[in-house]
Every structure is written in C-alpha cells, then in structure tokens.
Length: 166
Image 1 (cartoon, rainbow, N blue to C red):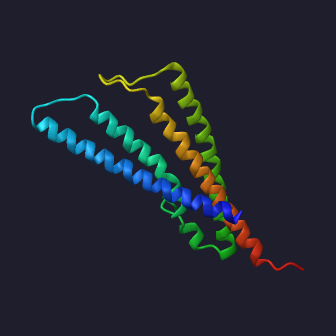
Image 2 (cartoon, one colour; image 1 turned 45 degrees about the vertical axis):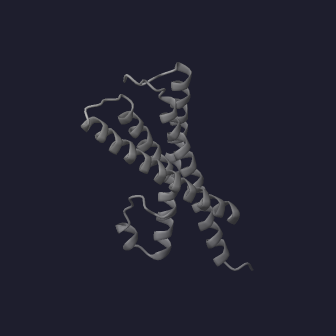
C-alpha cells in the first residue's frame, strides 16, 4: 500500500499543477476580456470559459489540498483529548470525509452522464456543452476519494508498524 500512497501523492501534486495552470488561464482570459471590452469590442465566450476553468481548477486541486491538510478542519476537540483518542477521532473524521466524497463522486458522475446524454448546453450566445464542466466534479471527487484511501492506508500501516508482533 505504500506504493499506492506514493503514487497518489504524485497524482495529487500533478492535479495541483493542472489546477494552477487552469486558474492562470482563467486569469489571462479575464484580463483579455477586460482589455477587449475597454476597447469597445465584445465577445460572448470569455466569461463562461473562465468560469469553466475556475470550477475545474477547484475540483482538480481538491486531492492536493487533502494531501497537504489544507481543508478546513476543527481540531479543538482533539486538542483536549488524549493522543490515542485524538487519533481515533481523526480516523473517524477521515472515514466520514471519504464517505461523503464517495457519495458526491457517484452523484456528480450521474449528473455529468445525464447532461451528456441530454446534450445540455449553457444558455449563453456561445452555448458550449455543460458536460465537460460537470465531468470535472466526479473526476476531482474521485481523485479525492483515492487520496483519502491513501491517507487511511498510511495511518493503518504506521499504526500496525508501531505494534510489535508477539
């Protein structure tokens, strides 16, 4: 399982790089849009594209955020507990997070497939299909699920290594 954890660590870092590039592209598109509109021109695609890029960036950054413990967490209760009880509480919170991400992966996957099958498009003049935007959700949540599994397996491996065999 250690190899899986190392693999997921690398995947999460690659996802963070992809998310950074997408966010930078969104910023470039927004700057271009402001510049173009300042000169009196108008186009219909740049705002929607930048939204698509920012949403994709959010979901692709999720596994790396989990890897680096960047998600919002409340550790006040664990601070006042014994070390072993705090570890148990952290494990329970991790398992709950895993369950939520599994559920959201499934729901978002169904949502993206339904959008693809119906051929849904945005209501703007540009009118791109919605499914690429929706597809970033189950991909991001699915990778976060795998990162949760890697974290849980790491903790299990560490705790079993601490217990001497008789």
